[in-house]
Image (cartoon, rainbow, N blue to C red):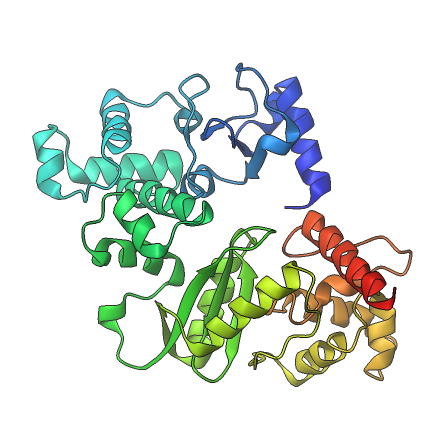
Length: 351
């Protein structure tokens, strides 16, 4: 989400602007709670806010619903049985819900599915799974290993945790027998990233909170006809090591082999992006001229946005002709940080 939009949402939050009710939700990092724009509670500082387009996004990001503004009750008050189910999830988020569990609560399972889909645009099972995923992701973002995160959220075996991971990756391991790519979570100074690779090349490197990440993974999966499963390869170990050196200011040129999934035009653009000197920036028009198509700056911008290898293919070094930073899939704040970081490394190198 762009910094400008975040500031707009924060202003709406401070004003309890009803025009934005249901448009966004805010997660408060210090409390782990997410709220509606009209929440009457004391307002958090801007730096402690995370903004989401849906309640489901907030749940997956490990936030729980606020008891005061009841973000899951909009636009209508929840019936008592829905409230009971949400409370049950909070009391035991790792629980796997079966039809007999609903029978014990005296609620029809089809009614539950219909009510949750109507009110929250997700089924109850999706809600419970989202909460479970959110808790797991929270542990991973705190620096826990996958196995520690698995155990901390109540998964005695790895199967439950694989289910949560597969929900994001889009493929259950037991239902696929074709080629396989491995995916790992990488902790960085700018937030968690996901790396997808086999033993020969890196196919995807993105920030976990990038908008549309699920679509990128799905596109990769379908075009290459592969399964993507949790795990690590020598290529993932390589990029993990190089990223550590990059963020420590010891490396600017990556050597990990990559696979570029795109059209010939997109690949051409990405290859040119890799020639932009570290610590410097080019405009979209500069890139268009470099590929021999000076009027194709809009197509260059589109190719920039389709890059699936963040940092390695440095689309963050492309700005507008008026020197405005423009957009960045990982967020403008990260773009600003990386440009400053690379400039400082270069300055130290030449001192």
